Length: 397
Image (tube, rainbow, N blue to C red; front, side, top):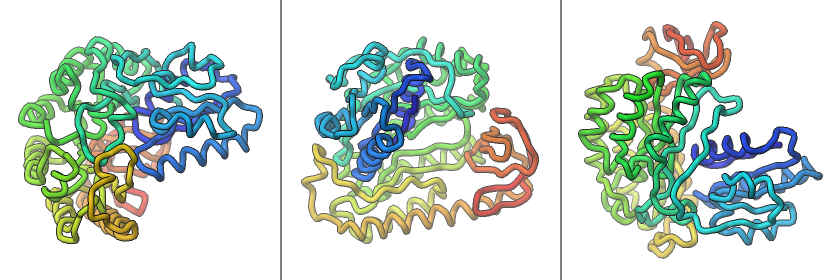
């Protein structure tokens, strides 16, 4: 059995669910696709074709968001034997069955099995929520993942306990829009940390900054188990572009949130999802995004040139920014992120850090900086060391 995973941490979690449901000896290759951009879809199809060449006798199963949106396109691929939707891939009977096509509505309540491990990983992803009720004009996720629904608090706690009992020192909460959990994101996290004190390190997946107010800052202040790295789904640093995108925050609110978090966790670092070349984005509006990144000292940048997605409102917006200009702007932001990261590395010299060991020679600090280890350490352990220097691969300690 082999599972090839594309896209977000939700897919990673769901691939782990499938891995526990299927026996290791099964002659099956599952390609868990992503649909966030046209490039992501292309890579998924490419992986399917490559899997057929490398495993000519295996059953090839296509699933994931790209499949959920356009199942017929994958059923028509000669390399594919079975097509499963995002809900169906988690149903053991369908996963182990022989039905060639099973893709249904994705609007059901969220129920997920308890899993025990992530093969080859030192941190465990815990999906607490699924779907989205917002209408960002560029985004296809709402169609691929359905409406907002959450895992119950009791299920979240049970899954977290299972992970800690199986030796995971770090848990990452993930979902399509985790801050919109129906039971209240801050309430869920507070209950989780109060009832599972064994959690040593807790991280969050991408966060929509719009609902994050004083209660979130207070939560971060109250629980040192929450790691001081916060990745926000910002998308743009210009208020006019944000309005056209259908986002619910302003650049000022993002900067205020960063300032408030830095006040309670001075060593916090920040990341952002950003889109360049959204329809109508002018040079001046793009420069506002550059300025936001600098003002917020946002070092970890996930930058995507705008990608037209059929079924979204943005596909009708004008004027269209040329593809090459989108890519040019993306490179400017990526280079800026690298420059800010190098400056952060310089400031880390001589400091003591707590590290989760990813392999015997690499790990990640609390504020999500990579460290190359000069001495061997056990994978999954948390160690304390002093930063001695840095290179193109990260800090050295």
